[in-house]
Length: 516
Image 1 (cartoon, helix red, strand yellow):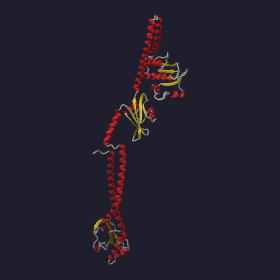
Image 2 (cartoon, rainbow, N blue to C red):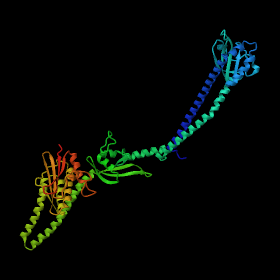
Image 3 (tube, rainbow, N blue to C red):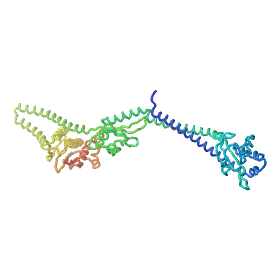
Image 4 (cartoon, helix red, strand yellow):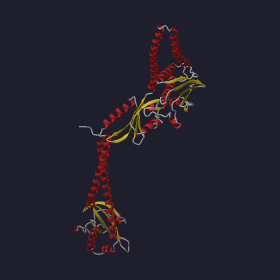
């Protein structure tokens, strides 16, 4: 037998509890109704007895030689009119003058009368000739002397009280049945909703699912952010908190970059996002169940180290390609020099060789002499060769000077490499000559990086947005390089700006304070 789902278990428990409550309530209602019926019977018999005792005709009849002749018809008429079971008028010595059973007239009354003889009222349950009954006994006083001249007892049998109570049971039973049906229907609706929300799973299955879910969330190496339909964060796993820098004090606070990506409400696959000092790759998608929107799931992967290594690798690759190109050119020039020597034109061959060597050596000496950071020097040489292949004249400012590594090399590569790449892209839009100038200098406790170009430049409104993530004049897939530059500058508390160049184009300046 398959285990019951949690919805079915809850339904059964609710029905059981409601049945017990309704049964208890019904029992209490019946008991209260029985008590009320007894109290009502007591009130009725006391009122009837008091009324008879204060009737003048009863006192007059008690002085007659044969009181029963007048009291029996009167008592029976009163009994039938009031719906009581017996009305007994008796002498102080208990001798009955009236009774529903005529044979008992003249016989002594069975019951308590002492309190009534003392002038009080007797109320009791007593089993007499008609069976168990609720009865009262009150005194009858002489109007002239105020002496007790007789007693009146009025009673209703317990059977009559029970019959009246039983007559009410169908109504109570109907109300109980309706209450049970309503409660069962409500429980069924609740269990149906719960079954839909829990997908019919039982407690053990839900426990296992929670354990697996929790284990996966803690073990997965990607950041995971789940946002509900109302835009509120419903879940962030441990890796997501680490990548986004979220603490327990602010569990629902997302960085603006991530919140903006979620708010765009469009599918996103591997889109770079800058959060703090990290470069994250985000993928966003909406989750649905049975066509109903549940929320948004955002996965995050840390590409900070990978991008840094990629930048360094690009620098090395650029340098390698430049060396390969120079080797190819050197081979051509070597053949030329050898041919000229064979032709006996030795002086011209020497002049050609030394001229080419001087140009290459001059650039290398300038870069190596100005920049002691080997990775940055390699980057500049590689970008110079890359610029040459694109027909761009890249010059290193003679004022460039960088001793040691005042700023970590990885960050310098990010800033310099992206600024040069941006300048090389910009000058491709203008006709030759295309020029890019680079200045890297340490002075006054900061590292100054300035890259200028003679490209089309930027309007003031474009310059204000150039360092924003995703902004680019080249369409989708760009707009990351300058945002990385901005990220590095902000991390060091530095400054960045774009200004128009005097001869046209743009000048991008970044100032990085040297860490103490």
